[in-house]
Every structure is written in C-alpha cells, then in structure tokens.
Amino acid sequence: MCFYGCSRFEGNKGRDKTLTLRFITPARISYNGHITSGLEFHILIRNLLRRISLLSYFHCGVDTSAWDFKGIIERAKGIKTKETQLRWYDRKRYSSRQETKIGMGRFLGEITFDGDAAPFFPLIRAGEVLHVGKGTSFGLGRYRVQLQ
Image (tube, rainbow, N blue to C red):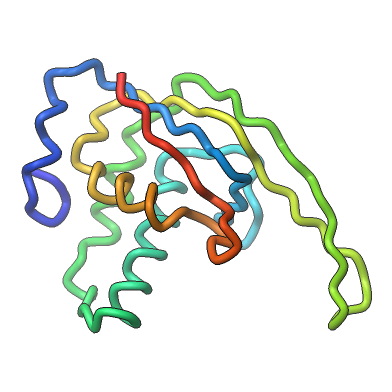
C-alpha cells in the first residue's frame, strides 16, 4: 500500500524494481540548506513532500498534519541510486536587488534508482506535473518518469 492508502499504483510490483527520472529542465534541489549537485532518492522525496504539502495546504485547504513525513522519508532511504548521468549546469544571473551576479547551479540528465518505488509513485507522478526544487514557477525541475 502506498503512503496514503491508494493502491492503484501498485500494479508495477511484478516489474523490475528500477525507476529512471529524466530531467528535462534544470533542477535546483536543496538539502540541509545546500544545493545538491547529485540526487539521492530520499532527497527527491523530501522535496516532493514539501512542495505537494505546501500546495495542498495553501491552495486546497488540506490539513497535512496527519501525513507521516518521517516514515515516508525513512522508507525512501531504502531506495538507492543505481546509475546516474546527471551533469552539473552552472549559470549566473544578475540580481538588481543585491547588485551582483548570483550562481544558479543546477543539474540535468537522467538518474536511475533501484528498489521498490511503487509506494512513492503518487508523489513521483505528481512531481511530473508540479516539478521539483527551486524555480518551479519558472519551469525548472521538470522531469519524466521512465519505468523499466
């Protein structure tokens, strides 16, 4: 059963347990106050949980206090990176407020995870539509799921 009780995404349990994400637009994802140059599955899930819970609360009035954030993240730590073809993409932008150039490093490419990701499919599929990381309102963090 997936994290909030839906079972419609569990039809993939008999498949090979790999999941590939192809980042179509650069992703700028933070963890522990720092921008990550790589991506671990639990970091992806943390960022998706944050984005989806905030959108649910502020735009839909959903009370997310009952969601088991710690449990979901702990389960996500069991899924490991199998292969990564992420490449760092660095760009600077000018901040007129700060009157200086600011680094806007992010990554592009593909990453494959190994493990039973079926319980996380609702989050992952929502992320395909909502994107993940910083700058999503500018179209950053867009990815496509490729099941294998």
